[in-house]
Image 1: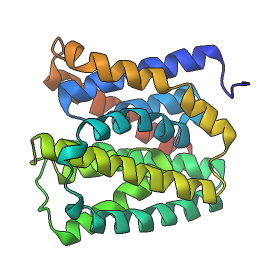
Image 2 (image 1 turned 60 degrees about the vertical axis):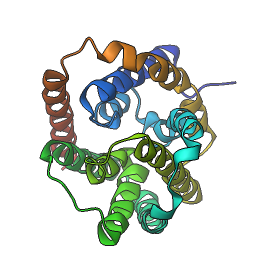
Image 3 (image 1 turned 135 degrees about the horizontal axis):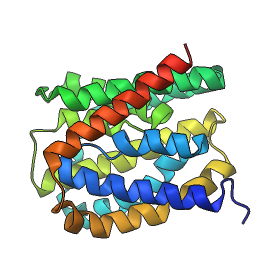
Image 4 (image 1 turned 90 degrees about the horizontal axis):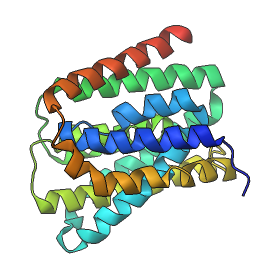
Length: 241
C-alpha cells in the first residue's frame, strides 16, 4: 500500500497521539488540544479526517467495554445538532481555499483552548445539548477538536455510565462527521490511509496512558499544553490574515 506520508511523519504522528492520550489522562484536557496542532505541523494531511478516522479505534474499544451502561435516551437531541453542525462544516470545507482552511482552523483551535481554560459549568438541558451537538460537529469536521465541547458540557458528570455514554456519543458523532466530509469531497483514500497509519498511537495510548500519567504533574502540564496550543492557534491566524 502506497502511503500518503513518509515514515518519519508516521512515527512522529503516532508518538504525539500517544503523548496526547497520556496528557488527557493526567490533566483531563481533550487530547486533540495538543495532538491536532502538532499533527498539522507534521503534515496537514493528518487533520481533520485521518485524526478522526484513527480515533475511532480508541472510542470503539471504550464503547464496546461500556456498552451495558450507555444511556441512549439522552443523546438524540445532540445527534440532531451534530448532523446540522457537520453539514454546515462540510459546506464550508468545500468552499474555502487552503489558506482559508488554515485561518478557520486556527480560530477554532483558539476557541477550543479558551473553552478548556474557561472552567465554568454549563447547565445540561435540551438547549445546551442541541447547541453542543452543532458546535462539536462543526469544530470536529473542520479541525478534529469537537470533543472539547462535550468535555465542557459534561465536566461535572462522572462515573462509568457517563464515560460509556460519552464514548458512544463520540463514536456516533465522529461517524456522522466523516460521512459529511466524504460527501463534501474532503475525505478520500489518501486520508483513510493516513488515518490507518496513526492507529498504533491510539492503541498504545489506551494501554499505557493510565499507568504513565501518574508520574506527571497535571497542573503544570495543563498550563503548558493550553499555552502551546493557544500560541499555535495565534500563529496560524496571524500567518493567514
